[in-house]
Image (tube, rainbow, N blue to C red; front, side, top):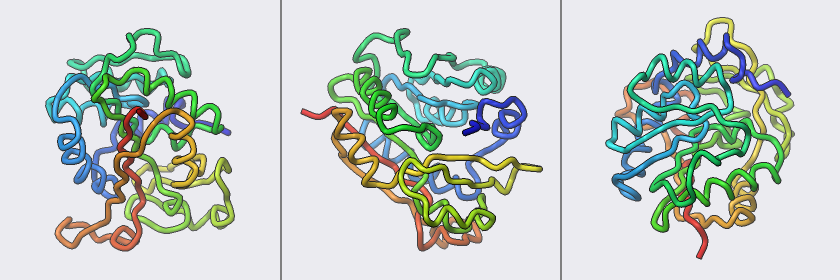
Length: 239
């Protein structure tokens, strides 16, 4: 499968994404969730992309830095956010960080594109080792529903095969706001799939949040009022 996030042309378009449209639901609800669970401290943004979520963490007062496997994304992040620290890492290599270094680890969408249950378990286990005793890991992912409905920011009508996809199958989606947007190939994983992965990685589900659109959001929602496109998981190290 092709990971479009590693392509320089896609990185350029992705770098221009804000928190509008369907992403507004994450931007609206994530800050209060984070600050209720861990109001301050050192934060690692895993899969930082072009730095959008790292910048959000910094704006919320965290001592934040970002890591990503895609060199093109990290280069964009450094250009757009010169006051923040970004690193390119090899898959699963967190040797640059000591264990128990972070109060918060945020993964904002990278697991949408990571194939293989064993690989996910290994990554979550490694991220768990970076948490301080009272730390939390927040995993923001696309819900399984995002691939079978229409949204303000995304379309899936060209991919009816998404409806019969199971966990670990490739599903396809297009971001409406990109000019000549390429098809993005994600890996489907529903709630049950993630719960099994967390348990195998030694993580406990503290909270699961599914943001929905509201009338006062000022957006002409399509499916977002009735169906949540995102799942925000709050995780802690198991006792």
